[in-house]
Image 1 (cartoon, rainbow, N blue to C red):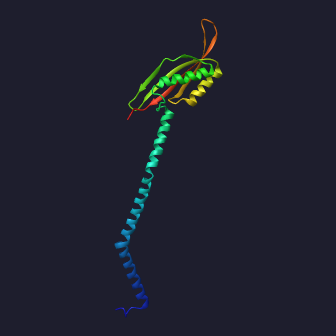
Image 2 (cartoon, helix red, strand yellow):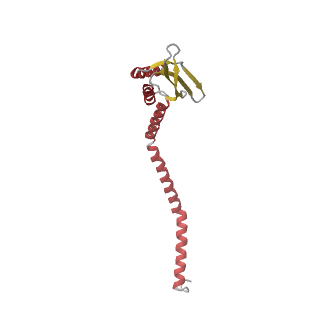
Image 3 (cartoon, rainbow, N blue to C red):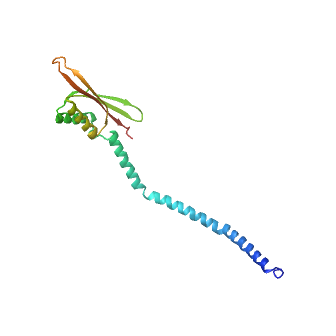
Length: 177
């Protein structure tokens, strides 16, 4: 049968046979091998990502601590009110400002957080009041200055005008886990 075929026909037949053998061997052996190699590479990538997981967890925890400090969840003192009074008192003394009023704190609780608001009234000249406000905004560890209002009040006894700065400090406390 092969003797009756011309060289051209023999070449075409040989090409077809080689193509069929190649396709069959690819499907039987190589296809599975390439799939396993691909799965192996994906698994190795996942494993490499997991190798640096402790460092990433530490970095995320540091970021959470920074955010907690920024929001005021991490108090230097157990009693935030006492610490706030001490800090504001020191700043008032340094800048010759009178600490007029501290009516206490106001709590707003939710199941996800507790918002603590402190109201304070200081009295003095404008520039020293601004210095105290600036120091509070920069150095306050357990909350942020939420609102400031300047008011001039006339003293009924002496008739002198006095500048009062009324400000609110707010801190967020997340529930203990």
